[in-house]
Image (cartoon, rainbow, N blue to C red; front, side, top):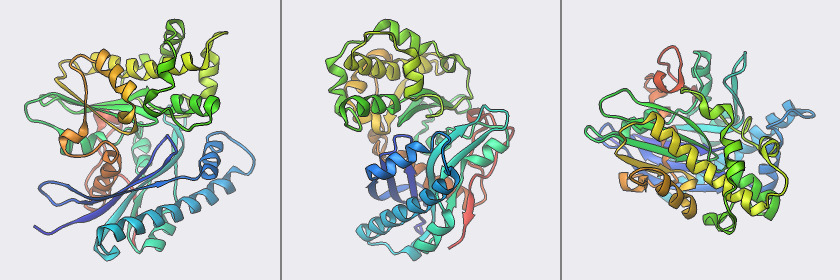
Length: 365
């Protein structure tokens, strides 16, 4: 069967860099052919963080950052293709998520912003680009997120086993793959975003490797209860969220006097584990297998806590054939393929959109 090559790119809420995959989306079994990770510089990361709030000359800064990201993405694609021995002419399209700086699906006039200059990226690479996947779903009354459940259904769903896929990036989201019902999914709450921000503020490190710092603290029950009292956790799906809600300002309003930094870190880790577990127990009744993907899967302490609070424990999506670091980028290659074929990419039961929609704007090579 003829190979159908696509590139998928994902740069998520953690702002650490861009994951890039080369995939063969032939009609039978999608194949992962190559991967590349392009880290962000500290300056780029800080500039992107500043755009999460209104500030001076932000339109100009956003445009310049979109260009800068496009050059970084193009470099990553060049490195990926070189290592894989594949030419740009063999690629049908790039599915580029872009970098989210605002996600406000619940406002009176909902919108979402993912930075990338897709026209520039197409010009730099000589490859068609599909971008801006979330806006059409929001225009149709949806949350615009999460979008990966449709991909999870295509590659991970079992005809006889009730599975749940949990993606732990900056934000945690889950996909409920019940073989007897329509696929559902939603954002659970913070994944790594609060842990990373707190760790950076107090240690200078961008993340807490394996939860080693959190392991030195104790969970503060009163703080955990205060964090879980946020109305977001009680909302029924469909729902999505991001840094617009879960940030250090939000955390600061919940803190009591006297918590040590390491105890707060331990509590934030427990918040991620408990909010995921409660989401599964409430909305995924009868789940038999739970698989984790995303950067949170590398946090051994978080994984052990998840195993404690989720009935039946958890394993990684590596066991389903796609390593945890590449699932989201793979998903956006698949969504680009859907757009090129003029097929829908959203699931209305997940996002709440009023109908199925073709997602993404296409920028020809």
